[in-house]
Image (cartoon, rainbow, N blue to C red; front, top):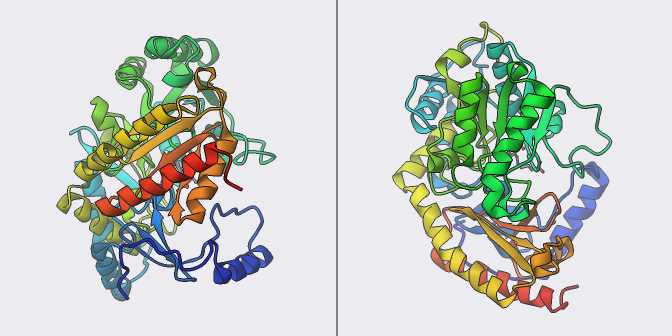
Length: 450
Ligand code: PLZ
């Protein structure tokens, strides 16, 4: 069955079949696993999710920045089918296979910097971040890891400690791993001294945090999302990241870039660090890399990655052959279709419309930010007062959902409305999705959303 690239509202959303499935979900799935929009999907592709009631929704979320090449992308489907028929698992640590090596070769080619690199593969973003921390500690012989306000790095015990936000990620899940220190994030819109002073003052605050609370010689790594994801699509001011990178190098502190959400064409470059000319020591990737199959990686300087003793890194499924085949096909798709360029086109299509929206609602749209196909608006209740308005973000989200547009919010204060469309989406659907979003926004501001 081919999926028409068309929004269709066949029933109310969620429709009766989705509602019945949701009742089964409540009876079988832990309440701890939430669903933001309980429409049950039966097929997806391009920019469309088709649900069990025959509704076709426009996808502005990509399953949280994963289906960059599109859902069930043709090359990925073909590669996975071939691989699954050949063999599904041997465990790379027992009897290896070429696909794992080929993914690591691609990672060496594509990640920032032309130095000698090595990679190790894992199953999830959190697992990659944990392993990057393990490698950094092992290589440096130092314990402390410095992270930032608004950071998101995962939900495992160590990555919960690295993640900033309590609800829903950490609440009553402690105690957390130690030797994690937090510095202020260079967040121009909310920097106390104003956006102009942000780069300088945030850099000074980082240096002071490390000096006074950690000690440079105790610090293994600074871990940062080059554009923060779950924390609110926060783009640091130009030059700040490069300055942090230089300072880390001077101190013998490794710079780990968490490119799990920003990586693989999402921001209009292969990696968000590329935009700033920053070359981190270690990079974590996942999400968009494998077109929807679970695969994650740590890639970094050969001397750092090879400092670990044989057998020190691994896991039963890490670099599963089916996930690797999917990654090779997804990366081939990104190259063949120049998806970094497509992400820049998405930015060009969105920004004028977001700016027009901000002009129409100057008291409610506090900030517009992001890069490529990773864009967001920060919603406030009182214009320059900058009071976060999570209720407005959630009303816009509900109104979009009712009209068949899948959207996501984020941010420490829950007031950031973010856009992560698949790069396989067509221009017509992008424009139609924006029409739906604008109407939803107007209705929400007018108090007309239930
Ligand atoms: N690092 C930068 O964005 C995952 C989380 C969704 P996993 N972001 C989506 C949720 O609520 O669980 C993410 C990320 C960055 C690490 C991770 C973790 O990746 O594959 O979800 O473990």
